[in-house]
Length: 163
Image 1: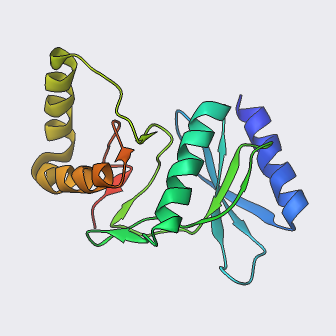
Image 2: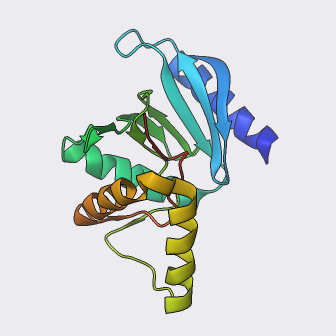
């Protein structure tokens, strides 16, 4: 899977006159790289997804945020979508520094999946544990996203990063 994803990143760069620099991270939905070659924005992030479903969910959410002019939520920067390629499952975005909110591949737009009460209790317990004292602010950010129709059910200190 990684080999195909890296090949898609290389193909995206070749099509768009960019240079693939370094791998910023690997997650359950794809790989994020740094790319350069666009003087307008300088280096950018390129997220290449493993499969179409999370790619399209994330693309639609970033498009909604762009349409609404959302570059931050409660002082947390949100990457701006610069380009997308549906064939290569690639999203080119601005690079953000903490505090930030990013990675919407596991989120849902305009509907929330149904979960049992037991799952919600466990979800809250897990998030209280992983965010610690920051959980109340993370909840506020999640509520703000929900008000925008974005239902993020996989928050982590990696995608809601505090300063």
